[in-house]
Amino acid sequence: MIRTDTPQDWDERPTLTTFLDYVRATVHAKCDGVSEEHARSAPLSTSPLMTMSGLVSHLRWVEYSWFQIVFLGEEDRGPWTDDDPDREMRIAVEVPLAQLLAEYEAQCARYRELVASHDLDDRAKRPIRDGWHVTLRWIIMHLIEETARHNGHLDLLREMADGVTGA
Image (cartoon, rainbow, N blue to C red; front, side, top):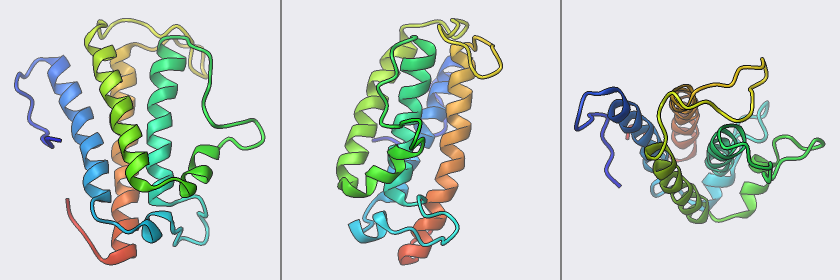
């Protein structure tokens, strides 16, 4: 997986998709070589769901939610429930990190195709919480922001786990 934040072309679409791919690839870089024990540990007593595995699962399902449920208007088949809205993070500790990363990458590949086949001004089929039918452009920007924010969490968890920094 190539990890660059420099687009081949400086138009809007390649800039947005390059940055989204960059933050996605950073998820993999932060997890590279981490042990299963550390991937599943929650070192912050106030955040028991904050594990590296949980964050990878969360990011996978966040993309699913935005692209398939909101943008395409498909039925919600995510792992969460009304009683357990963070279930994707809770169940992740039972899944090998390599599997979570592979599932995330496979889903990202599908969404690259989806983004390539739609105009950035195309509107989501479902409204977001305030009633707006956001554009694909907005969804991509939101995913860049959310993935980058969670990369910061992964960075801290990795450093706490085994002292690895950077990437």
